[in-house]
Image (cartoon, rainbow, N blue to C red; front, side, top):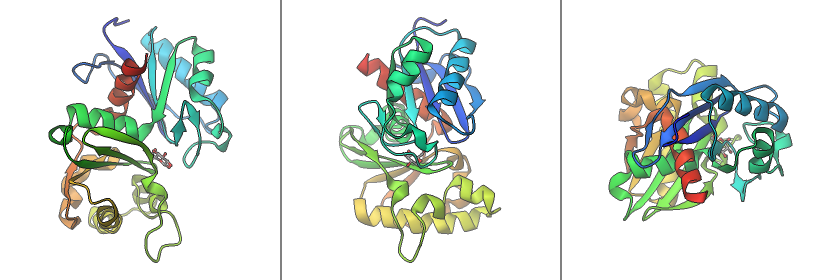
Length: 252
Ligand code: BGC
């Protein structure tokens, strides 16, 4: 075990990823382990996978966990991409009881945003400015920062776009792209509809794209026509893990 670091875990719709993180530098101290999210992703099955991940890393200490739903005071309040039985479940207590370690839980996009504002593409707006981070994965996650302060649980993927019958994350996400074999230009055009709306409503200085689809930013960048500058998250997929560990280090 690496005493210097704190374990950050990112629970996603398809994978549960974890690594020990140097929270001062925002870098991983171990390789990032990825286990399949069990299906159905109930509190019991997810807790067992989290325990497996901790055993593999031989870690003891506080754990930060990014969770793919609204999280209020450690409790899951929504469940768009995880089993519904999580609603009303205390994530921190459930995982803590299974593993014997103290857990600190927050929304997964908020975790990615914290890392990005401290160590990544949002650094220059960390003290002054409005930044929206959007994670494009199985769902669409959102994190809003005003002068570096996080407004938690921005459920940006749950908004409706004009003339659409489904919420934004069912209209465009990395999952929608893969499921429909969408080309990157098509993806860019659909993403632009969503981002233009977010831009008009929140009027941020900067929009940062994270999650799986941010790796291909160069393939669809030219279709994005927002007033706010759009950047890809430099920490890419590690942001959620790093941010969760940073969050735990502040709350422990
Ligand atoms: C959830 C969000 C989450 C996002 C990314 C959405 O389905 O509603 O809470 O941040 O997926 O995982």
